[in-house]
Length: 313
Image (cartoon, rainbow, N blue to C red):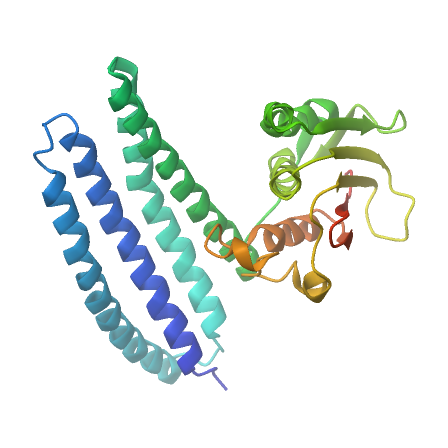
């Protein structure tokens, strides 16, 4: 029996399509805004008008898409004997749309970087930097959606190769070391002498996990220290190497500890709107894909420790 498209899934799909169309309209408006800086504001009002009109158009187009999708889904139920869940359909749609959105975003970021290279005016450079940062942030969010949809649909695959564990760890650490100094935090790395110099694993996915956990540790730590350590896994968890990220930050409220690896979950209420809420869910999926497990220990007001293991193939 095929799974019907429930009202909840219809609402999620509608909001997803609307958000994607809105992002595309925002990309158009931002592009015009960039050029308005070099045309004495000629296109500034036009970019605002386009964004507002596209906001309404996106709502209407999303509704039309949902109606057509429902008709297609009903037809699929009658013609295909194999079950297709709304979740798998949604994951496939997110994957395809994420790929499409990345193309114009990369174009905006590339144009901004090109303009910045030849610009000497300080105010215009600051504007270009702000646009690039916004574009990078949008691209990061789209990539998170893409990775999560691949994991959800079971389409994420490993690409193992020989990596130098020390080099990879220090590459991840470099993203927060300078910021830790500016914030007055002590940052340290401890790699056990028993850990081999090179291992065979998917370095890109391991780096993604470390970047996410270190980024969270930095974000939630106002004073004290952050430590990253690696040693042989001697616990009863699956995997060969044990990674540990410890911070002296705010910790995780007790009522949320059991849900932090769930998708669309923020650690604290004030974090709403600051990200996708997919970071730790993606980490969990990647760790399990790499033959390991992830868990944590935390006490509100006293810091957190995140552990994860991977198989060193």
